[in-house]
Amino acid sequence: MKCLTGVIVLNFFLSVNCVNNNEDVWEENLTNKFSIDASTEGLQKVNLKCGSESMTVELLTKEEFNGVMYTRGSFYKQKEPCFVKPKLSGDKTLKMKFNFNQCQTLKEGDVFSNVIIIQHDAELITTGDAAFQVECDFRKPRSLTVGADFQARDTSKTVFGSRITLTSPDPSAVSHHKRSKRDTVKSDTHEVTFIPYLEEDDSESDYEEVIIGSSSNERKIVDEL
Image 1 (cartoon, helix red, strand yellow):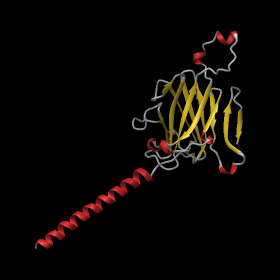
Image 2 (cartoon, one colour; image 1 turned 45 degrees about the vertical axis):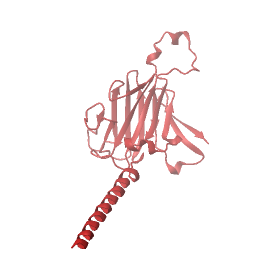
Image 3 (cartoon, rainbow, N blue to C red; image 1 turned 135 degrees about the vertical axis):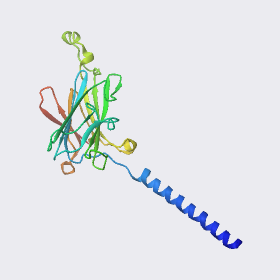
Image 4 (cartoon, rainbow, N blue to C red; image 1 turned 90 degrees about the vertical axis):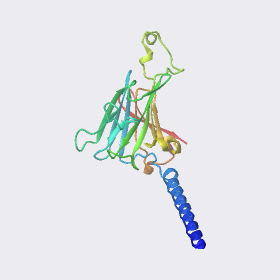
């Protein structure tokens, strides 16, 4: 009887140990192996316009967009202007505009930034979703020549640069995303457009920056290796 009891107790501890080991493996698989990386799937372009007190982000997709676009941290409240969704079926464009004191916009010196999440599913972040860090830069360039007429203006409201950087839509995976030069576009004006990089366009260029100047004409600048 004592021998049988010992066998039962031993089997119990072996079973518990096995279950715990399986839980450890399961937890490791979820936390370390599963992540949502940055993607530009289905996107045609993302445009940023910086104003004196606000920023406007406009999305254009290749096909009908049925998802949502919002600033990071605004999904659960789902309130405009920090959260927007298509108003009409079949829309391929989506626009959001918010002030610098809204939507948890960060201010570092004279640079205002936020992270825009583009989510193809209205409820969940999934593979193929994207996020972009958008920046409006009011810092006056050191090389700027200041004339008498320029000095008379309030330069604190003048945008001297804008930037869009592709990043991960999953906050826990941001640090794991390896950025390349293709992930960032910047402009020395108030407006910049991000156009997803296509592998078939790869030649000697490392990345493309699309800049829209004050004349509203698009210019492509290719930085060669």
